[in-house]
Length: 283
Image 1 (cartoon, rainbow, N blue to C red):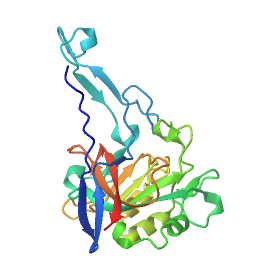
Image 2: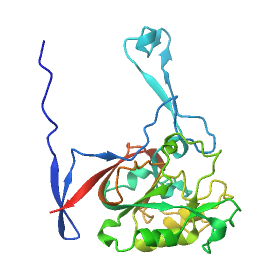
Image 3: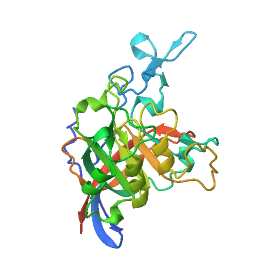
């Protein structure tokens, strides 16, 4: 019998410069902040859409399931990326023209800052929302973002990763129709745009209220498209992305990271994604 492979995982370190300053990233130590999509198992859900599912393909006498006599497992998957788990979307989400995500992302690796913030009672804040606030709404505010990002190096604001507090693990299987989540105030998203954020990642199902009369106000603010307007030119549109329904475990500290935004080559406005963080060490 062959001896088991006892080789240790070798460090895979890379040196890089960010804003002219040297850093080192260890690619052998990835920090996955996506939610695994468990077909026909526990998974987060928005709007009570059908859960993502998998079934063995059948055609005549062929069955794509080894347990049923097939020669291999050969499955067909059904999912709605916007509602079934971690996904990344582009401006094609709000445009008449079907602008695909795979035409938008040219550099899927970028420096970013992770912050943890608590949502606030909307009625206790002077920040605004569209449509107007409901009595039980919770919002992410510009005030909280400014406080969390105080003193942050702008070189690490190409991406912004937001972990909302409390950080319950049931975010990985939460049914959001039962507990409507927080959303961005108008001022909070205006602040994100002011910072020059190109890639926004958060552990909520949307930056907007779940039922907002179809306004998608803060989506429009982020992609700099006038509210109510869906005329977007593919050659001149925003190259920014929003990644929703991530989960950042508590052991990952707030701070600076390199993000690898792993996305299948779908020609669609959104796709399932697997963002992975790599800690950065100054050299």
